[in-house]
Length: 196
Image 1 (cartoon, rainbow, N blue to C red):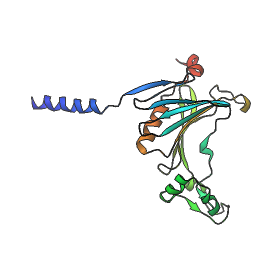
Image 2 (cartoon, rainbow, N blue to C red):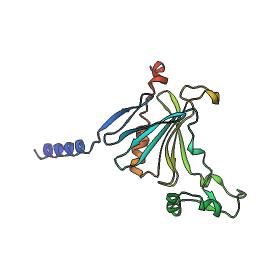
Image 3 (tube, rainbow, N blue to C red):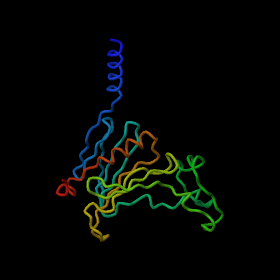
């Protein structure tokens, strides 16, 4: 009897701890996110833009269009004093907790640049499309998200339809939930005919 009661209590605790999820449909793509995250859309000039507001009030933004950028191409975290003054306020606050280097002039002689890269990069196939997922090497410093160089698979720059979806300065928990959500992306228009 005690064993049965213990099992029931454990099952009850586990079922209460489960998060509930929902699918957000943006028309061009769908994504599965925690129930308390909410969709928003904006009017873009040359692309489709919008995003999600998380339960912690973080803004996760996407950009789908010919000019959608890959933020992971940033320079390494090597700064001159002048460059430090140009950082955003939030970056200046977080910088002391990061692995970075301050130099007198803009030369990399004798410096292993790989030690100071801003992002960890992983490549995935998400719903038939090659994607790059980035996370900051220094927790919470920079962007977390996804970049897709071509939704249609076209190689010419003038024909590509690019996609990015990023959040900045995310907590470990929000970042983990966001990366998990990004792996659920579905691009029916681009992958529908390729599904098995």
